[in-house]
Length: 333
Image 1 (cartoon, rainbow, N blue to C red):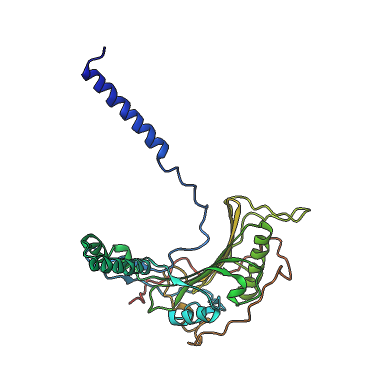
Image 2: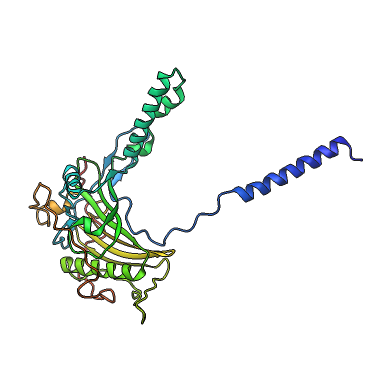
């Protein structure tokens, strides 16, 4: 017969082991690894976080350095470096697209509006809403970033209307450093279940961008997969195929990446990181004489395959690219 102290000790040991086992079984599994390289540059602004004790956000933009200027900065019917948010907002409304500002500040403001309504309802019923009210009146440091991310999810390629495109569906995104600056980043990221369709989409985009910007300055080191005798295409997993054009005032990227069973094609045109967002509109830039009104989109069309298939990435590199460093002259607010 065991004494009470010994029974208590054994019970404590058993409980501890059981809890450890439960924690091991119920803990969240290790999340899957992210793709080797992101399709889209999430942060485009040259923003400087507020100093301790300050909520003010400042920018440290630089002038575009020497080197060739982009021949064109229009992207998805807007003009990078020139279009302001009201123009882009009018553009997507004209196209019948459903878009929203998905920046941290905007999302938190929407949460506060919903919480404020709940607080008012609770007060009307005579309930305590002090805890909720304190959360609503407190802003986080992340909300200091004024970046505006105008995102349009579930957009089909024919809805964009900028050019004839193979069928696809994805997210159209326009990014502004804040609402007082012109468009910095524009992109269309779409995902395919059919690898062959992704290859056609990628090749079509490469051909379209090459026609505008000339031979790219960067091409993939690995050849693109080719259809087998049955027309089936298989992209290698987590291998990023990227083609790039770099100018003093503009960066253009198109890449394709498989993650799991899906293949994502990302196409983006943006002012390079750290450079003032109106760089394409400066003298000598493609948007120097850009109209201030919203451009009229082309008629919506689709295509099942490009007229001329691009079976491999271009191998001729552009002779010059924008420098990796730029003058330190600031042009922020």
